[in-house]
Length: 304
Image (cartoon, rainbow, N blue to C red; front, side, top):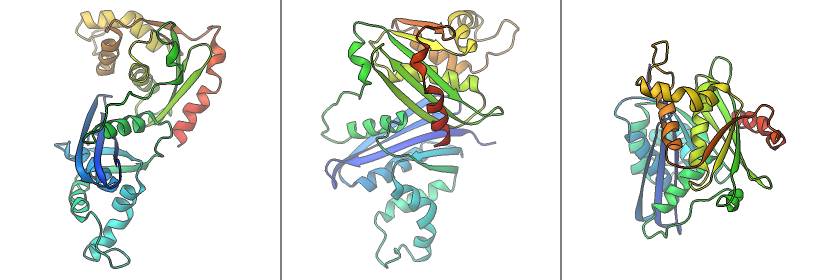
């Protein structure tokens, strides 16, 4: 069985044509992440989008099953619909004109045959956390680009003086499969939601761990957090069990390896950085009205 990975890519220019940047986020099947980015002084939006996908696929030294998310219909349709016709016509379009960016299309055509790729299109600038992330990375990679502050949730103005409440939900079929998730950050007055979809996950427990870790990447580092869990698995794991697992070199009390140890380690890394974090079970919490509609957001993310 081939290893699995999820990839988000983006690319663009300012102006177009002009200096451009591209970026890649690779998430392996254990939830580990890798970022790639680069830029060129004279290019186009489309070339940067293609370059991002090319660099993503070149990052693997063995064939993978890949769930690839792009916000460029040009890239997705080119590789899934138009390519066979271009090749038959000796790299001519349906109007008889030479295909633009032929050099990149040819290199991509050779790369995609090495992997099993599930192509997905996501709408850009529509709140998908991972798409927004590669958009920022690509913009920062443009030669001469001025550093910009990472887009922050609207509630972050309160972060310096007050604790932010964080709620999250996941939706995963009983026997595993695609998963949807939603995070809500709440300061008691305002809130902001983040949603996303993972193409394949084996259980709700695993996705809950992945999204608990995602919280620390979503909310600015100086914000004290109170994270509410619906799952005792996550709550007891992070507040009770994890210390024993670490002492036993990530072996449970019964002598078996800790399941999802890599994700637990990542979560432990974030909680050990000195940031004020309080974990709580959501059941009976008087602020539970703050989660209204959060389950539906996770389900909608799964269905998208």
